[in-house]
Structures are given as C-alpha cells and as structure tokens.
Amino acid sequence: MVEARVQWTDGERFVGMASSGHALVVDSDRERNTAAGPMELVLVGLCACTATDVVSILRKKREPFTSVEVRAEAERAKQPPTVYETIKLIYTVGGQVSKKAVEDAVRLSEEKYCSVSAMLQKTAKITTVIEYS
Image (cartoon, rainbow, N blue to C red; front, top):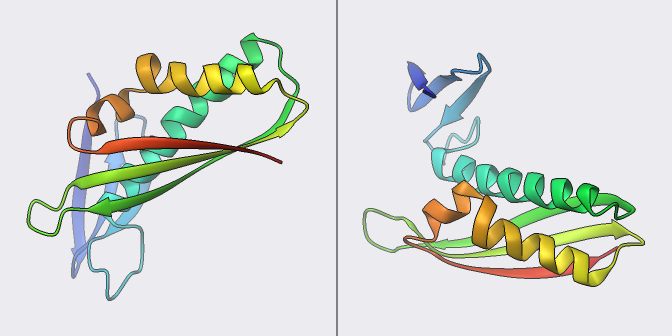
C-alpha cells in the first residue's frame, strides 16, 4: 500500500510526505506562491511518469538517446472542481534516435504504461507532440 500525508504549516502551505519517506512543500496559495501547488504537482507527476516510460523503452530498444524532456501545457475547467480538461505533452528527445522508436515509446506510455496518464484521461484530453534536439 502507498500512503501520503500532509501537515499544515501556515497559510495554505503544507509539508507532504509519501511512504517513500521523501518530503516536499506544497503551497495552495497562488498569490504567495512559495512552493508548487497541488495541481502543478499532478502535472509534474504526469511528466515524470511518462518520461520514465519513454526512457525505459528507449533503453530496452538500445536507442542512443542523450536527453529526454517532457513538458506539459494544460487548461483547467472554469468551474469547480477545476480539473484539467486538456493537457498537451511535449516530448523533446536528443540523440541519434529512430523517430519510429520514439513514437512507439510515447504511444506505449500513453496507451499502456503510464498510470498517471490513465487517471487523467478520465477528465482531460491528452495530446502529444514530439520534438528532436
């Protein structure tokens, strides 16, 4: 079982801790903005999840990539709950990689492996763009 908890510190700021033992600060007050907000962390989690898949798949295919970056651009609903309605994932992959291998890795992440993407697809239309550097 995975567990997470937060402890209020002040204002709308919390220290979060996961069962891995790692802590991070979360600030829901976007005016004060002293740390990432909860919905920003959802996007960070999505980027990390799919990037992990892509790196793992490219390694298995022995593709000579030198870098992988995933950025997310998202729009939220206007009315509460302000869930993500659209998310655009931009993958930038460096190295002498096969375009087909990268496209396959991104597709496999989206369709099969990325659990964060699978959850977010319930409310958001997720699109992808692949760039090469």
